[in-house]
Image 1: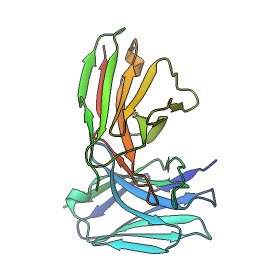
Image 2: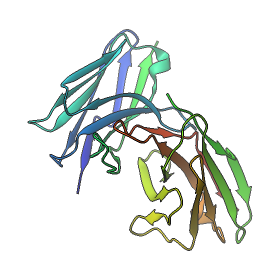
Image 3: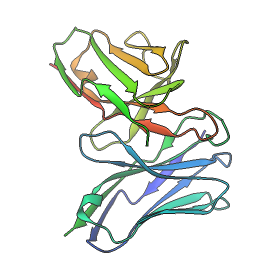
Amino acid sequence: GENVEQHPSTLSVQEGDSAVIKCTYSDSASNYFPWYKQELGKGPQLIIDIRSNVGEKKDQRIAVTLNKTAKHFSLHITETQPEDSAVYFCAASRRYGGSQGNLIFGKGTKLSVKP
Amino acid sequence: GAVVSQHPSRVICKSGTSVKIECRSLDFQATTMFWYRQFPKKSLMLMATSNEGSKATYEQGVEKDKFLINHASLTLSTLTVTSAHPEDSSFYICSAMTSGRHNEQFFGPGTRLTVL
């Protein structure tokens, strides 16, 4: 089955710097890769996702890149702000195109943005 | 994004009692809902997948008689923790998936269960 590895487990950056979180997956059939932000005591919030038919997607300060050959995808946050501090989870699944594969989550990255 | 609500947000109960948690998709119909359990500083652990009108599919190691799931409508799924014990204390999160080509998955705010 699918296995998702996420690094680093913790990341501390200064406000205004960029943050990068990387994930690798094992199932070459996975085609949907969402990223979730979870604040303390709350449920995960979908912040961006990418499907296997594109290599990069951007939404304001957040971007995600996908390398299907190497089977890894990354989350990039630019101009970080203290409110970006949270735990971020990557996930992979066979979901695009109407499939119903379960999301397999990475173990999470705790991002701390210092003012 | 789509909104998923969960009720209650927190519940404290005595050992041996049952607790019901509701999960609702507020602005979309969800043929599939998921229930997760999350331990402190850990990732989400899928407990079961719930499809409207059919029996839930439980992950290996999850007791179906202890964690009863009912997906009665396209907007409501419930998780009942039966005969709760302190080891059942955890953060339970539901999730609902949109249907069609873009099967996005949205999470509820979670329910903190504490069993005394």
